[in-house]
Length: 125
Image (cartoon, rainbow, N blue to C red):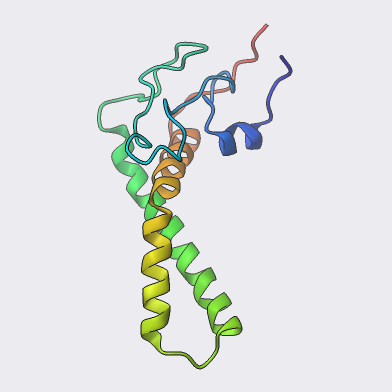
């Protein structure tokens, strides 16, 4: 199997070490189980939680994703739907953020592990 690129593995939620095993057990569309992670990579057996409580720091990544998304959407909505009530914007933002909870949760953990987990890529032979 050809090696997956760094960005492709990150976007697909693959293990940072082998870039083949999935970090999460279920697809993001399974709303009741979207948050369940594999304890170890199913392909290379690396531990996906480097230390206890490691993912507490991912809440800062989640906050950054949320703020960036809300700023981008605010600008877009201001340009596309001008002169509307601020309550319309607030309602749309709340609905969008609730809809995006599974994606935000997953990608904050994935980004945190890739950037701060200390797991380096090892090419499989």
